[in-house]
Image (cartoon, rainbow, N blue to C red):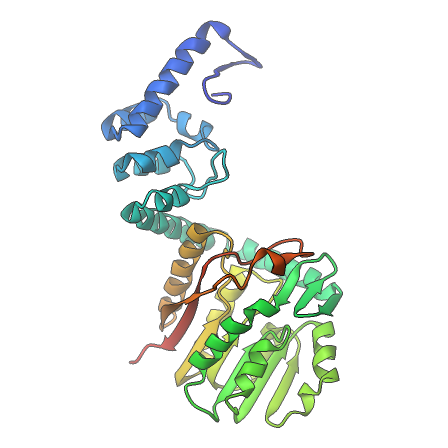
Length: 349
């Protein structure tokens, strides 16, 4: 195998007599990649199938992107270089493509990421569901604290933050094209979304909330006494079937991941009236544009298979989530400049 770039292992030691030759061969291979020499790269990969996997963590795939030759990128991907691998600078090949204005290359990398992740999801679905249940149980056992304009857990992770208000306003305007509708919101958080929905005077407003601290906060502030509002306290998996059907459905939970969202999507056709609209807080991989675009595509494909058409409306974040907002928070969950707001409707028969 290769130890770093240019060191060939011989047992536990590097064979210094061969080191120079290995360095030359690797430099030649790198030049082939940078030069877009598809057939030469393919020949080397076929002759040394362990070479490409040993170079994960380097800039190899990014250099292939820089060549502008998709064939080279594809050879490396098929040889075992992960589509989402980070180089020494913490960048992915997708980010390299964006930085160099290679839009076509970027789209091809997104498609590769979508194909790979869909395949992995189908192979590991049961394992992912088990992990989701564990994560959710841990979250629901944590103490939550309502601070000024943010809700945090005991680890200083933000459950919801006030800067999201403008996004929630956009979601509500999409979900409620008129007053007097029936609406369902899963995940109360700071209550921003439900306050926005109330502006449209819903005839029926159902809120599902699983965390006991948030539920107690809701009751303390009289949400259980509001006209037309019904609170279902519990996990959405346990209580949503008794909620009925709606003109508008919104999903925004914490402590769950994409597999949980995918499971919820399976029941959206049951919850949504024929002319209804569904949306969700789109924080999918919200700190990396490349990963975010991949998971937006995956979500759209999963929804399409369920008979739901999805379009994304671009909303400028305009610095709402600036560094000042994240002070005292352990981990940022959305740092992108543009928010892709999903608008989902049942496909007409």
